[in-house]
Image (tube, rainbow, N blue to C red):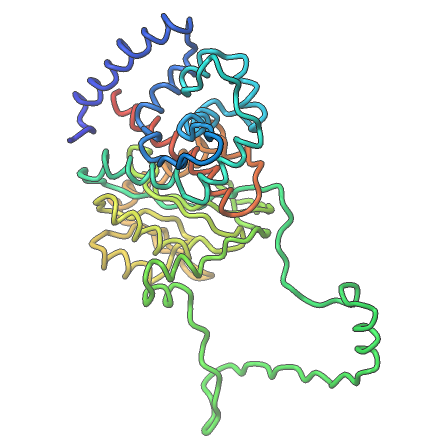
Length: 388
């Protein structure tokens, strides 16, 4: 079904606006605009259809996971920072409690129950699966003009991982004594690399293979396994040209012209943006059909141009002069390149409106789960905006 056409979007909007919401108003009282947005987004994503039955008849009945999943989507929409704030809101807000599915006659689950359910959702990649189904259902048959690719900083409240090196403080006293008695061999520095052509008979070490060249010879699963996901420290230039540094991760997004995120990938903060370009392009190519790949100068690479053309896309990548002369776009391509601002708007909305700045979990798996609930809500909200 072509649910992107304006007539069908308006039909779905009218059913929710004139049938479901009035019924809820009669049941729980007046609804705020934010609660109406929660209703629309939950109706669009249908996250309860992706949750299996986990109780097999032995032991105590678990809390309904569909209600908890709805609550986490509502948490992203309402911009609640912590799970404790979500439980407090559910306790005092009868309308939100009814929207998420929790019965009025029963006590709300504890905070530890919410945390265990979130761990299950993160390990099972629930939000990722729901988002993939949402994109394929509503944009899979559409022709996307431009896919804008960009990475954004995600600050985390955890210590960055450092390289495992043995220091005298980390050694046991016996090990420290043994190291003091050993004779330390002198360390010879590596010979400096000569410039120019090698002499006759001189053998030099082969050049280090670039990550992008290696990725073009790998499968998608191998690429994803090679992407670092540990928390570390990253530095990049912002939109104003100033360098910023942060502890945490980096989120890479592919965004369509309409502002809907197509695919997402999480990496360490120190990883260069260009290493996520090929995996993201392969994931997005499986979900939608697009024409142009729009990227900034951080992705400037001959191999990325060739990869985009191999997928049947036209690369629009800003040239990185690297100390030389900068090459300008053709006039028509320069107009198309302006579409890349949709990626910056998606990153800003995810952080400001859907919980991207309220990160309270640790570990790449949980961080990605938290961000994907926000991306899921953002995607549904952008799809609803197409009715305008």
